[in-house]
Image (cartoon, rainbow over all chains, first blue to last red; front, side, top):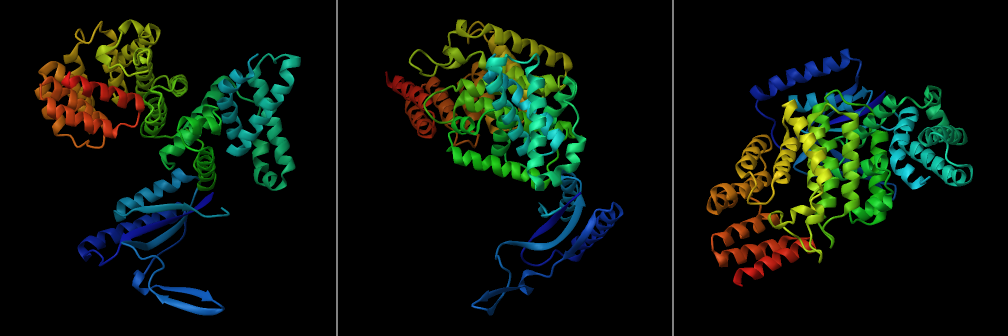
Amino acid sequence: MKQYLLSVYQPDGDLPPAEILEPIMRELLAWNQELRDAGAWVFGAGLHPPSTATVVRVRDSELLMTDGPFVEGKEHLGGFTVITAPDLDAAVAWGRRLAEITTLPIEVRPLQGT
Amino acid sequence: MDIARVFREEYGRAVSVLVRAFGDIDLAEEAVQDAFAEAVKRWPSSGPPPSPAGWIITTARNRAIDRLRRESTRAERQAAAILAVDEPGEEGVVGDDRLRLIFTCCHPALAPAAQVALTLRLLGGLTTAEIARAFLVPEPTMAQRLVRAKGKIRDAGIPYRVPDDLAARLRPVLAVVYLVFNEGYLASSGGELVRDDLCAEAIRLGRLLVELMPEEPEVVGLLALMLLTASRSAARTDTDGAVVLLRDQDRTRWNRHLIAEGQALVRWCLRRGAPGPYQLQAAINAVHSDSASAVDTDWPQIVALYDQLLAMAPTPIVALNRAVAVAEVAGPRAALAIVDDLNLDAYHLFHAIRADLLRRLGWVEQAADAYDAAIARADNAAERELLCRRRETLTA
């Protein structure tokens, strides 16, 4: 079995209103439960917005911090799930469901050493 | 015994069997190449074995195991695989292996250019240099593309399996083969109009697909389409290498064998009654190949087939080709109305077809402008030459 990172990319700006978001969150919960029931769930989380991010660098052994995300763009990483799957087709099938639920693009990427 | 011929015919088969056994494309390729190197050394003096294909597969399999034993890290990783290696299978099983490999090479998670390169390399047995030459890219670029694609298959776990949703996954497979054919037939850039080797390779792959999936109508339709198109290649250029349009072609130079084979496949498709885009395009070409001249062509039948094709594949290119047939049935003005609605400004044939319609309407100045637009957008020297000649005859 290999492990895959499923990343959710969402547009910057305000979240959709509750009447849109709530059914999505309900379906996401059900999807997560389905993953667990199938023994495919490894780890996952939603992220606070990029404005809460801090980038850390070290220059001449001195700590440098910058406010905001590493990459500024119109979209940002909104959350992720690590799953186990026998092959890419199986991982893509999980990713497809996630894309259908969130209506957002999902990046499917294999983890090293798995 | 022509080892080069055995190589072209058996390379894909041997690689497929070894990929199944060892689950590692690079190892499979290295081992099969080792086996052919051994054949080059041995066969000239000892004579070829009774079954060259079986000999290659058995030798490659032993070489692969040798390699795994030498490379301890790989051996650990593949320990389970060695245990699973069985003797080369029956023909049916081998066929399944090649089918699996086609679906791996044409997996939709790979970019189309990577799908084409992998298919030609692993199933066609073409060298990296040959593929690079065929697609007019530097050899290191093509080598890099292949390395990257094989790396993705390995690391992302692209499966080696005939997919359950065959109909959807067949689309990129057929697209790859047709793209290879068109690259050979239309030669998007460069001087020669037809690169026969690519056409021949595409037809060979098309035959392989029909052999592996004889009941899939679109697979049969694609082979028919390529055969019927290729049947006209000798008539497509004159002795100076200049392009000759379909209506002006010397139809006695069409290849009757390819036409007969293509038409028989189209008839099989018609009996199956499950039309698809490739089958319809094949049927359109079958109507052309039935006609003694452009005037005698059953144009209403061709328009009807294009109507069906447009319903299935509503693309501006299909609409453009349909307009050419409409011009023969309803006249150039009706066709021009269709063409002018299409958003195909970047496509040289859009302007070339417009120019011909404008010429037939007697609108010389507008026709000249359209020819200029077509000439500016044509990459192929032979096609540009034809457009220039047609533009010159406007004022003659």
